[in-house]
Amino acid sequence: MNQSLRYDQISCRLKLDGLPDVSVGQSSESIGILTGWSLEWLGRPQLEGRREHLEALMVVVLPYARHLISGAPRAFGEGDSPVGIAPLGEGRHALQLRSSQPGVEPLSLELDDAELADLVRILDQVRLDPRLQLPLPLVPPRPLRQRELRRRTPVTQRLAAPLGGGLILLIAGLGTSLLPLPAPPTDPATPRVETPQRPATSPPPRPAG
Image 1 (spheres, rainbow, N blue to C red):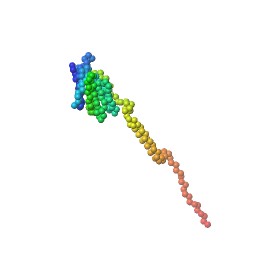
Image 2 (cartoon, helix red, strand yellow):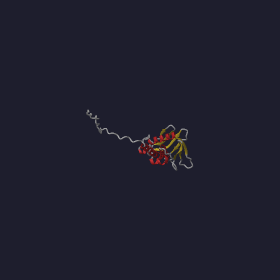
Image 3 (cartoon, one colour):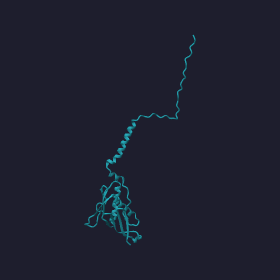
Image 4 (cartoon, helix red, strand yellow):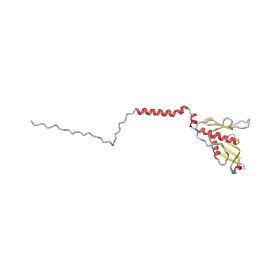
């Protein structure tokens, strides 16, 4: 029995068509054998492909979005990959679907940030949908390692924080050295010793002569 799964966002819609794999006991509402898929965009050409294109779309787009959020955008899916995506600058992204048939030109789409976000949400829904029982080669996205970010950060930005902190400490130390030293504190528990004053004596009276 043919099954269809649909995932909708504001700017795009993904539709999966397939059959349950009854040989492994899958339910009639699941898809274990993908026969085709289509990705519709508002005012854009429709993308279609086979299972390997869907897998390549997920493997390429999700890591690309992870790098983009981390501030280190770069191209994914270069070479002989069925899907490729690369940054164009100013919130634009080039998505390319390459056909495995010779002589067929690749289909390219230019997406903005909102359209890319919709595509990422749809792919996450597909990845987490229990009705789609396909062994997709995916792992949950992880944040970039610190060394990956450090390679893409200019040297001036990497040194600005430690140099600025050292300069602040130096200025604070010089300012403290110019302040007058405070008077030594008096311990209230120590009793004060007062020197007694001798009373004033008057001269002896002179004898009468």
